[in-house]
Image (cartoon, rainbow, N blue to C red):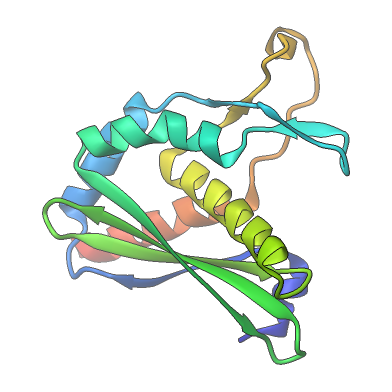
Length: 173
């Protein structure tokens, strides 16, 4: 439990199978088939749009299943050392071979009400699933053809990619 969560969502690999080669090969195959998620929801707080969890799930479900990969979110919460409510999602990424990685993401929730925890869990699941699938979010309104500044990649996507590369290099040693 870490009070540094005020910095934003935290991520880590908290468990994995002894080998990962088959899982990573299947994940690479699936990622090659996954399309970008369409922005279909509005965030009035930031006056922006985003791809909701259903949109991200729509573009990842079949390619992951075709590659014999399952993704199972386990939801939890706790109080950190300063008393804030922290929502957690342990995302199990499993392959038919039995290889797996458990990827933990967490962020502070406004409170422990079902609505606030549900919102935090949905946020974490959406970004974690986007990272697993290497899914970008694209505009529905044609702005992809206009020279606009690019949105930064989610921090968790970069973090997960780095951790997967690190785990893969340890697996091949």
